[in-house]
Length: 193
Length: 193
DNA sequence: ACTGCCATGTAACGAGTTACATGATTTC
DNA sequence: GAAATCATGTAACTCGTTACATGGCAGT
Image (cartoon, rainbow over all chains, first blue to last red; front, side):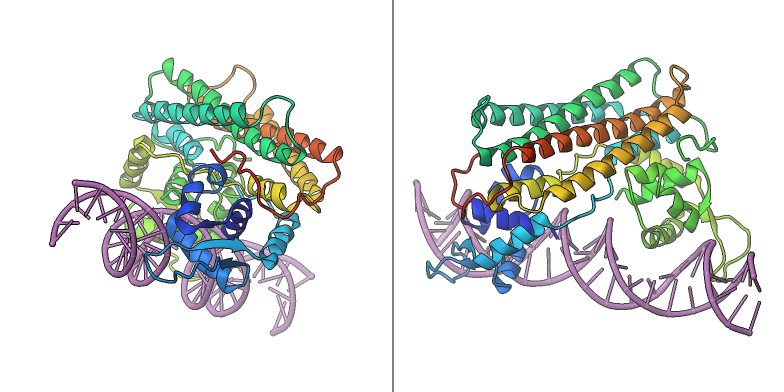
């Protein structure tokens, strides 16, 4: 139940139409909560039905017409409630780590090119974050409200830094022993506890 | 489409029943790909129907009876294929970062206790990973096939390390200025690009 | 008029979640 | 033989994804 709250946050930062939101979800908030336009329209409909947001009265209810939404007091209250509510961390799910684990069983053949590609993608993302930091958060100049945004951006930077380092290490692992099949199964259950 | 491959990996490491798999998904593979027993039974059914695994012939097709599965050659081939296939990284989704971003808009009131709780949870997880490393991967003694497992475990350790550090930093941010509401909206779109 | 883009949607599906149901085995 | 536990499974629902549909507007 996070998408509605992501949308409320985005709309509080700036009232927008569905398509505008979709574009904003390609950056900014979308960096840590992605959504497609179909999800966004569906959720905008629900939020409006629940009285948390409303379409600005620009009087165009037609189909291909732009609709701008703003957050109502009830929406702001709901967002504040959700922000403060305790939530358990979601169990991890990372495909790449799963693939490496699988490679430990069936061999690493063919894996290296995609690891290189991932490394390049993470490098790009890191550079993008660093550019945003350079532009929006000059050293020691954060207003109190911007501190939190900066903190969130730092998380993105540090995570991308981790992945680039880890992938580099993984690729180094491949350099020495050529990737091969490790046999046909049955092992000692290492790491199972 | 990752759960079936997680299961294939687990079954190659050791043939198991549905419940055994469920327990193993609470640790080990479950550290980076979680699954409930309902998901696992459903997926075991599909994998068997597709001829990638089979129930070991212990002749108990009854309802409350244990069924052990093993991977067939076709299953191993499919896992190898999937491991080597290129896959785009999933877009990030992190509730905690989203909440911090929301807090930058509606205020940080009530958030601190849950951040402390998360910090404690990540500390615990980190300790668990470190214990596994100490026990299963003594320094400089990795067999070639264990190198990959160790690498995956290192990713877990480094990620948990990151979160504990980041949460500590976030909490420090709260210490100085008391959490308050940052006004009623409308801002400059900082960090939007 | 035609093409292309902007903007909002519908439909169908698959993966994950939650609650519940049922048969078998062990323990007292 | 009642209760607890082990083991497998059903049903209903939500969220996210993919493919497609429809209406309006701008340029040529």
